[in-house]
Length: 149
Length: 129
Image 1 (spheres, rainbow over the protein chains, first blue to last red):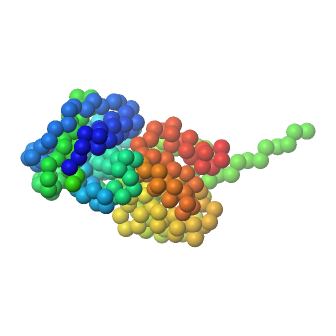
Image 2 (tube, chains in turn brown, orange):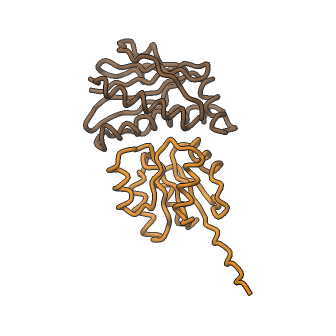
Image 3 (cartoon, one colour):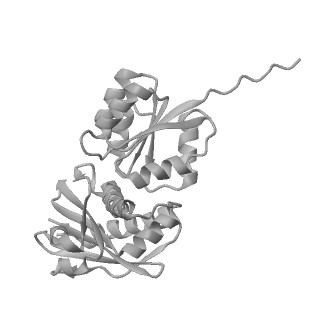
């Protein structure tokens, strides 16, 4: 189970990602505990499996429009399906990888698995309770979901 | 009479990352006139195969990749070309990982996410500018 300090690691990592990668800051809402994780999965989710000193998943889920605009802000002209899926995984990978600054090198992250609404249950398949970190960026809303034992 | 300045050597660069968005971002953002991107690879195994054909002078290298990770890739490419300059570009932000990459033979470490300026500064430092 995460404590407040650990949740802050992911909040700070998320804020840092948007500010640095897109040049546009994100605001983060109050993290909350969630039981129905499938309900927070949006158009796409990048899912990172966690092993080592912690077990669980971290995922970033966002609407397609937001991912397209993020690509544009990164000066990417190709906002097609492949790059949208790629980006959602890269965001999840970066937020999870950055968390090793606090969790240490035995916080082992997998390569991303990409899910969409059709297989949202895969993304949501975690045991235990999850913290949802709501993200507001420009006119969009997304979520970082952290479920760690 | 003043000496004619020696032209600076052009360097061939390879980009290795499993993310297409990241490969394109690095290629688009790097603005060093000495660097020419000659190839990209999607994981460590692909990188080693293409490295033998392209023999780049400079490499940007992700760490978390399928098939073969970046640390193992460093060991392989250094056996092929010991003076290749390697900039690890990774989200893994713990000091131990950066130290391990440098100890294995990488020459620099840039943490994701990064700005264009941070990328170009890291590449300039890598090639000694």
